[in-house]
Amino acid sequence: MKDERDELLDQLFCTVRSMKPDTAAAEEHFETRLMAGLEERRESRALWSAWAWRLVPWFSMIVIIVAAGSVLIDPGRSRDMFAVFTGGDEYQVSSLIGE
Image (cartoon, rainbow, N blue to C red; front, side):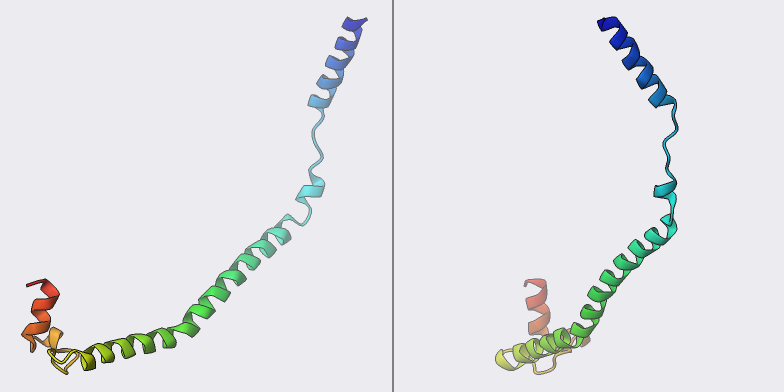
């Protein structure tokens, strides 16, 4: 009796394996779903990019304030912020290279 059940079960599995699955429902509107997903990702990236560009002026203002403050607070340095690049201030150049 157990052999008959095993044979029936084997036939059932064989029949199911030979049947091709119906993928029409998954294929329907695949391109539309794919493009909608890509557009959603693009919008989320655009949001971060927009915020980054909106914050650039604020960050540049912070850099300018810190640079001006470092020039005004340290009396041993030259008042010229670009003296390091023009070679006019030995104190700044030696402090940058560690001498």
